[in-house]
Image (cartoon, rainbow, N blue to C red):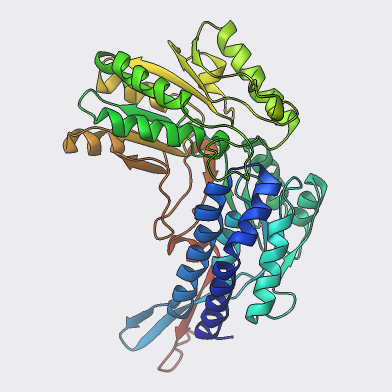
Length: 425
């Protein structure tokens, strides 16, 4: 197909996704435990936005012309071939869209493996693509655990692998892909800093800190789980934060009034509770939450009340390791140079946030932070138009924006001789 033809198919898929938004959101809640208020407003809609963006980009993919005087050359952007997408369980349909949209817009086919804990919505996306006119075999869904993922990443017929997952899985995927020199995009974990300077709008900073720790029960890779607050405002910050956190409603994720749903599994809930216990044992002060809810109707579910720790230090496990649950660690700092050094003292580099009214300081700190995506006076906003990805152990390559076109195409250079060939013999 031409780029324009591919774009038309993708745009039809966008319409179908939006028409089925509520149905797919309900499936997402059943799979993940996240609140329906989030899934119905964000998960499907953000996936549709991504496909719509790349539908528009499909017809614009092109090479370049090079005037060489008597001769000339040009480049072609060509599809890679078969691409593999491996999804995570926190945003199943969004991730399936984020990976398939650029792959299909560039003319590739994709084999997509959802996380084994959240198998449902990728299959609905496959139905929608077929109904939209995508030829059979161009978008394929296979189910399974890590063994299926490894079979795909090792397969010699696969040209590219795009994974969203944790760091250890990313290393394994990269090692398997290296055997046949596959293209790789890895969007991995994080332990991101959110820095609140003394001149920040405190209420906005508190809002961002809550969104950066408790949205989707804290199961978001870019979350700002290390909240650095200037010592001069720490008391008022914590007072306002704890009051708002304690007012959050935890419960049945199908209830539109609920703010915090269930974690993905009992094993993950126990992992999160183990980190809370470790934080207490290491000397951090637990200001609220960190327990299972007392409501009897929630006793058999994987619920954890949002936790806020104060008086944290940089060497604590809750500060250094990715928890992937509703646990916020608050630290204090005294000056800019100190907080930048501490923020960068991690193997991760996915995201960061800076709250200040000083525009020069904001851009100075952003330039010094080692992270792939940084927000000034906000957090976890990921427009499709903007590249998303990490530094250091948080990943390789970028998703979204026109930058993704480079990751789903290969460049062919063509030299065109306009004269005779001059041979020295």
